[in-house]
Image 1 (spheres, rainbow over the protein chains, first blue to last red):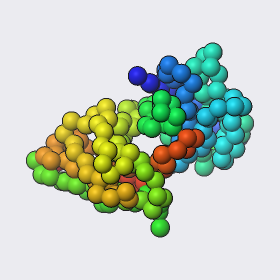
Image 2: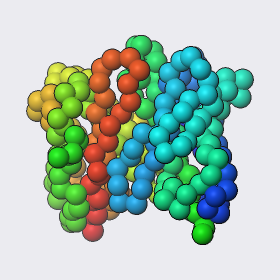
Image 3: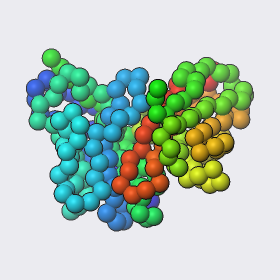
Length: 116
Length: 113
């Protein structure tokens, strides 16, 4: 069964500082990988996704993530955090057995706090 | 209008009551999902459906049932609500094709007292 680990429950960074949120997955083949963001009181919005090809993927709002097969990781990065980035971030893995991500398994989330 | 709409957005109900959460979508996607979110546990899959005639249990389906009334509608029912079903519930849709992502509704906050 697939699984996702987000080891950091809560991270605090200063505005303008760089950010890296960790995500490790467990899956028997090359997975589909996603990062979603949830702002307070909102649903989940897709930041970026990896299906194949270039292992460094660019997303919205200046985020990027790098797929590292050898480390089973898909860490999310941003070079300079803005106060509006404060939210909860979820990494997810999609199974690829049928050629599509038929269902997603989510990590437990990382809550990002940004200090001014 | 939102592509994935959940109703109600908030609900307080009593233990033992039956309650239905509804989800409708205008994205034309085949696949629909119900997740629940609890603090520290992330999102966990309750049920999912690949089309009107296809319903599948997720990892935490006990105490829940679903109905796929049409391609665009997918309802989640709690037959006899209990306090540990207090959570934030999300409906999601996905196109049944490669290289696609899930689209989420705004969520329903359910409190069972």
